[in-house]
Length: 65
Image 1 (cartoon, rainbow, N blue to C red):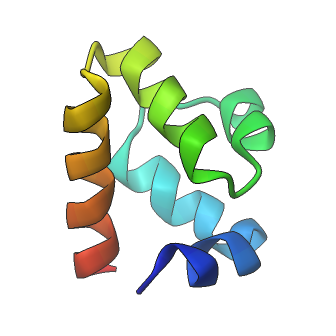
Image 2: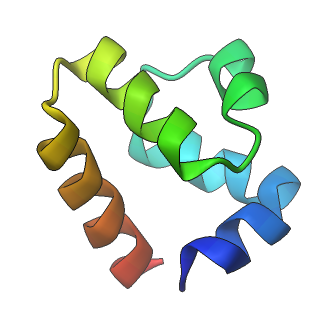
Image 3: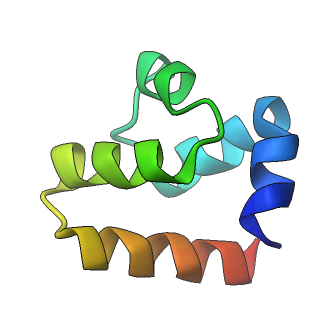
């Protein structure tokens, strides 16, 4: 799956994102609203990831979704 597919069906994908990153709140998911850069920022905040690590985590998740 690629990010265009994720953002295009964000309402459906929110649950899968929440399963992967349980520290994200509903408010976080509303702010992210399908934007990859917003997800990167929230993962940095909630999990203490570097930007590069957050991007790697998302890439892995996309590949497995």
